[in-house]
Image (cartoon, rainbow over all chains, first blue to last red; front, side):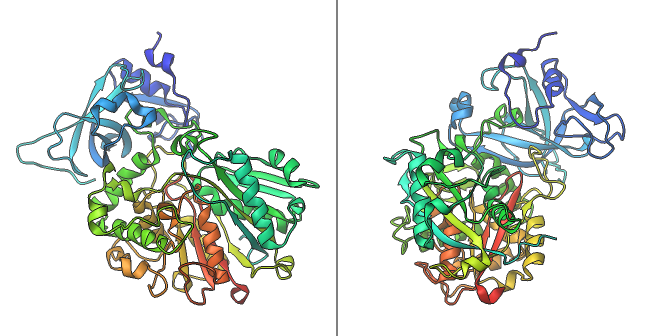
Length: 153
Length: 387
């Protein structure tokens, strides 16, 4: 299968996360788990630094996380100018408890009410778009509960 | 354990003026030559004697381009320290190691930037190596990437944003008496700080380092040679580079997250030098952003997240009478920003007694490298009596 993001490939960083983007393009939130020691390895890499395995199982997860940190961008920076019209926008770093606390970036979607470290978020997967530079993306949405319950990061 | 303690010294400093970004009439290479030649004049050495060339990050003015114009007799050692602003003391460490190992005798450590010769600094320094995880999610600039760490320092670690303001105001206060400082005419009172435009929360404009065109160079030689040159030597007591497990290119999965990633290099620096935070007379703290300066002070043991609000106060950060005089030239925020290299020159001036905000009788001078970088470094310089 051909994936759209591969036509807009961003070269930079470790670059072992193709399966992450492929997963999102197929509407699945997948993170890599070492086949040897079963640890979650994030960001994705080519070798497990703990047990030495070269094999990873990309495992689909329920995209539920906890806000670990966030920022609201007020300036249209050059290399992400596709989002200029959205300024100010919030980017959330969400900790994924079911993947041993792996932290995954995503733009905040919907209401900002209750945005704080420790707030619960749910991921919404979006198809490749210009704003996400031809890549699929996950956006984080705050989970509003009646009791305003929050977890602690 | 490193064995470079006191074996080399900075004997010359050279700096071009700080130009508004994109306005330098000279290209990077010429600025670089000017800074290196000035540093040689300052040291009393002939530029042709330089046999080692070391820079860091995305520097493009390499030995092979410089040597024809310097009259270099022989290049014996040339290296580029990996990473970004985190590499500055690391570059000094490479210089000291090369000299100690007999691979070079007169080493220039330098950085030159002119947006007229290239791109916006924040793009240039990223070296086209930003992970898709950032760019896809609207993050590209250092300020955006460091902002969530600052948010966590405030929200989860309980450090007051007043410490950020104090770090910024100390820079602008010191800049006022420094004729080189690009930001010397800015009066950063509480109102000006609070009403500056927001860039990436929690960072406003005055939390961010500047972008300038310019160049800065220092000359490093062996300690025995340093004694006989023009200037009072600034001995390199320690300049470790690196990162502990949990740091590196981890795309926001670093641990610890909210400070500067300098706990490991600071520990090695104190161990090698034999000194501790209480012994330091004056600090030049690399600040890409103010929160990272606060993080550097925490990582180096000058304070903890718990008492940062009491220690990082404006009065305490001001020369000559503050307990923790910080960024006495104005630093990256208010003096100017050649990728942090100006901090090395100021750390040396303090030991010579030549700063425009001199700390009386300064003997131990600290310079911290780019905080929050994927690897980083830190350096302690001392006068002869600290050896």
